[in-house]
Image (cartoon, rainbow, N blue to C red; front, side):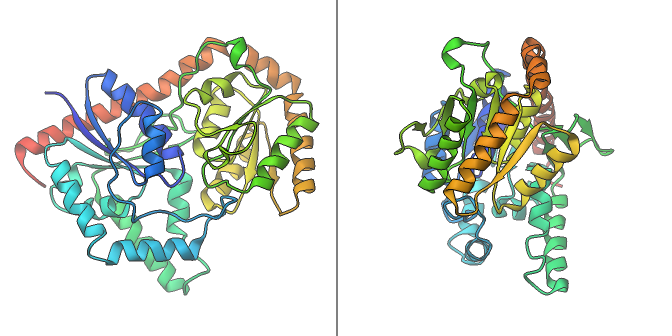
Length: 381
């Protein structure tokens, strides 16, 4: 039988969507039937640029950010509360998901959509649902109310969410530096963050700096100071960011950005799991634009412990200061000769490493589909 998967990719940033499009194309190539749902009009347009049609589940659930990608905790918590407790929102989405996925072998939750967290506790559905999440994102979610609510309430929230995650029979926790390994029960996995297979080097795609800022970056002065700092360091740049499509030198979406990053002298991005995975697999130095987003701060600290060649720059509201930070960090990274030599020699080996990451995910997803198909035949558990 053809494996049938429903893949729900939240559109809070773009890491979930990038991972979704990468895995969906690979799954379809392997013979699976995959339907994708997302959570915003912008997310749907983003996936369409990669050739994937993704209807919107609903737009009621979303993490809230300011124009510099700082997470707005109060606004996010209010949004989630309205989503969970208003009957026309989460309950409606659960009803739609049950209808859409009634014959599916696997229902993927990428990442932590409340409707799927709840469904993962229900008999029958819990065997179909796979939670996919970054290790740092889970830590940030469980600690969401630390220092905000009284300690006992914060701990209660963490226990409830952990219980919801663990109730589903399967999950994949990923990290840019993980090696593929399975837990003892074989349905809980730790996998390296998947990475796009870069195209062979091309002179037309050669830039000193490959820049990607997700759509929550909308502050024009930050974008201008970033490009000016790269110019000061004497570096050409390829800048991608949906929040800056109206600014000279920027484009909204580039489906082949990973290929550009793989042969650039350095990568510039917020410390998301996908960007760090590209830097690690293709041995590129990376400049991290750090903001108040808990899981990304954790990612940056992990990069430091692992010795990944990087520098951190922070926007403090002063364009001149940020420009100097960018110029100093980018010049240092771009002239790290020993690392540049290693990257130059990477070539086919790096692409093989990227392909191995995707293959590890596809192997496990198809195996979980087989488990789900057996459950459909034998009834709910």
